[in-house]
Image (tube, rainbow, N blue to C red; front, side):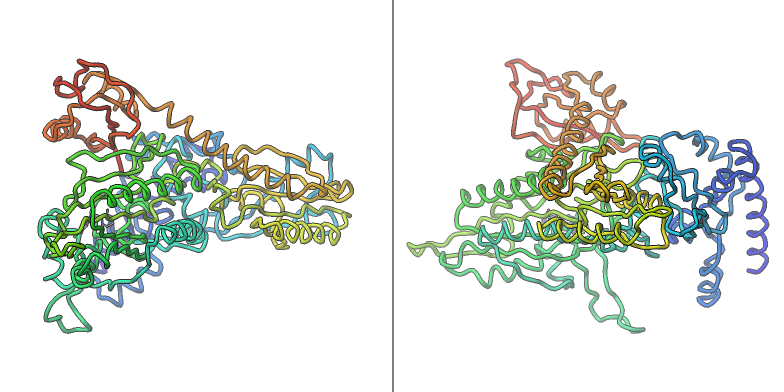
Length: 633
Ligand code: 86X
């Protein structure tokens, strides 16, 4: 084992040397950019721990103790040809990326960073004419040390995947965890979840839905009761097989969804028509042991959601509720997250196996050209009622089977929000879901009335908080204003208020929008109404820009050739379709590749006119409807 480790070490050294050479080719030799670039080439600096481990082949020969010891310090690198691979990626050297403007940070290989204080305050200095923006007196530059860098090393347009991973971590939403596909949701993410939860929970309560909680564990018998619906999913079910060192007599499953957990009790609780409708919801976690490319929020092995399960005496009531819930989902996306979505019905192939029909809200990520299912609302019909014997007696004493629905949205919503609105400075949070809507930053400098400025910041926060605006002041004295600007931009706070000596003198504040960088001086007399107006504008603008970008990706087409071309251009395709399952299977087969196959996303409820005689883009048969197609998450 020692020999293997030594060999690994040797390879590490060789690889590191090769990285240095590459970095020198791509950057200015010895520059901070060059050092930073080298550090990026070592996967350990950016890979989550599980990825490092997965690549560390010697690990299987280690004892637990050796492994733990090693894990605390090792930097993995076992492939000296890594540089070749990097070259093939055509990575653009950091200094050549104009959109990442924070290369003025001097980043040390060891992770200690000296921040150039002047970076973020430049623009303002230019405008207000001279002076230095530091807390320390004497006009001397104060060095601020921080363990991690500000700014992002990938741009959204050039490397979307890496940009996303970096933005959720640096924006303090996610921390990687040492189990693949599992992530720590930090307060900054949970607060968004809670705001959506507060809205949705109140809305469903108005619809007389009650909250409940069913157990996390499922016995194998119950899980397999509804075989058809479980069958395809079986490999994703996680099982508990041991307690301590002893095997459990009967292993227990962890819920991937709760139909089989809940419905036996629906059967018990529903007897007569007076027990209907039964409308339950639970806020919980579920586990699906997926194997394809885990992504924070978007595809994680454990996630948070709400699952609603309702039972009615009639199909009409069930149908109505499906659409009411779908409208709430639209509202979460469009009004809260400022993301345009399409309401529609899923194809036969994409319908939940246990259900009658499935509706969804579908979003789109322009950068990757992928559709993403935002939330689903199913009408289950009477399939589960048959399986679980959920029967009732009506007024006339006749036996009937209930009609059921189920519906869910999950923490995936947050991932879609990050992907749609985030930019090269970090997260961009819509005001309606931001834990902090506004950050107040004091901008004192040499000889300024620092106390007066601080007092103005505190008073501004008090005024705004009283008006129901989520505001705080960043009064930390170990960071410069410029550093704070970058930090709160990274975290996506919608509005920044700066208060400097001139603002103090003029009884005004300067507001800077996160979405478009626009700066406005606001008199403190009109503070509340102006800020409210700006937050509304930001919310609206985020939606408008997102919609414009999505709409620009929509391609309406009618032939297979156009379809293939559009797919290659990352388009969201709207095409006339014969609505046959085999044809969709064929589309999938014909578009298979490393990017994933194309599939139908939904048949929008809002249908453009379909002229008589229009043919299906894929089969040439008579088209029945317009349907959205594309690659998807
Ligand atoms: C489908 C269907 C449905 C309640 C919803 O979409 C809304 C809320 N559930 C979920 N589905 C599964 O049934 C499923 C089952 C197993 Cl065993 C699994 F491992 C994964 C699953 N994924 C999705």
